[in-house]
Image (tube, rainbow, N blue to C red; front, side, top):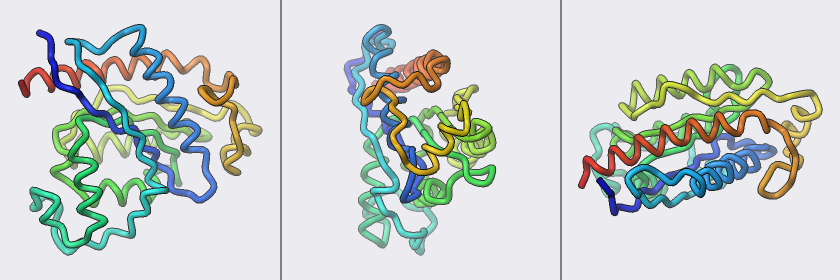
Amino acid sequence: MTVSKTVRVGVISGSTRVVRAGPQIVAWVRDIIEKDLKQTPAPGGVALEFETIDLGALGLPLLDEPGIPAHIGTAEGYTHEHTRAWSRQVAALDGFVFVTAQHNWGIPAGLKNAIDYLYNEWRGKPFMVVTYGGHGGVHAAAALQLVLGGGLKMLALKETVNLTYPGKDVFDKCARGQPLGLPPAGTATIWQDRQEDIAKTWRELAASLATKAEKAT
């Protein structure tokens, strides 16, 4: 069956550090996905749109809503305008690509805070996880799988993609927020051997999105 609906995917940059490499890595991941789509269109003829969300630029304060998110069904049910705006943004998306660093073996505080603001806006939506760090961010990935797939009842893929810094030089550049030269802006070959893993995981997410879109028609 061919699905005519346009499916919107949020690509979320999870690090909110003032000095960070996150936006570069997010742009690279999105570039891999968009290039793969040209070769392998989404199943069922689904039309896809992407929106990059930089949580560092979003500037959400520490969770300050008096209500319980699971008990709030619409954006108008929140007290603060910053929450209502965030609710509308997430509610308009059908699936997510989370790209994040690992902080102290866990989810960066800014990302967890942004997640915890909402509930129903996340629930039931497919997602994939790409983490990066000295050990690939595997603990952050596992925590995200638990929080999103378990607590928020989102649709988790079995596998995550974990990018390990290939050397101290890359670690230092990431820590200082220096250019890594990753495509599409540059031609660096960092993590070149992981591009197919990202593309493969994306195809699984695209299939999940197409299935969900078909059920909704």
